[in-house]
Length: 186
Image 1 (cartoon, rainbow, N blue to C red):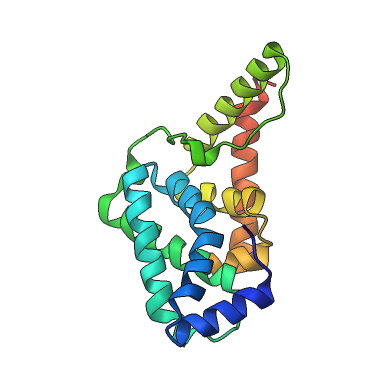
Image 2 (cartoon, rainbow, N blue to C red):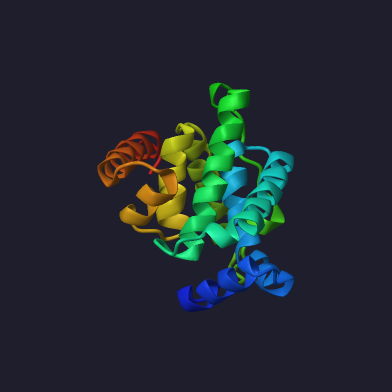
């Protein structure tokens, strides 16, 4: 249930004043996409659930410190991103190749298609998922934030706390790597 930036601003201001209902609305709007983002970064559903809770605890506790320099959505993603990166650094998960879990929350209702077309699309999605697994966390995050969550490079730079040029170079590298991995198949 996406919200508008103005509505998010009102919700964060109300949350800062202690409104649990406003906080619940923010949670309802962003919990699923944030969770999916965290799963793709950590490769662990249980860890993603914990990081999601830590992210929204930080939102609740930090709502009064929100300065409005970015959209609320970007601010929440930045908190989630930093939670994931901190966890990854502590556990060094990036060193281990793992499969990204696919849960029902990752799936969207697809229109009914013939079985052959559906099988081809599922195979391609699996190929893309496996190719994304071969990227580092930071490269995977850039692709995810840009293509799944539709953030601009400027917004991604704020979320990841790095220069916009770094985002562009990570994206360029990630796309070239994905093209190299997938190019032979398609």
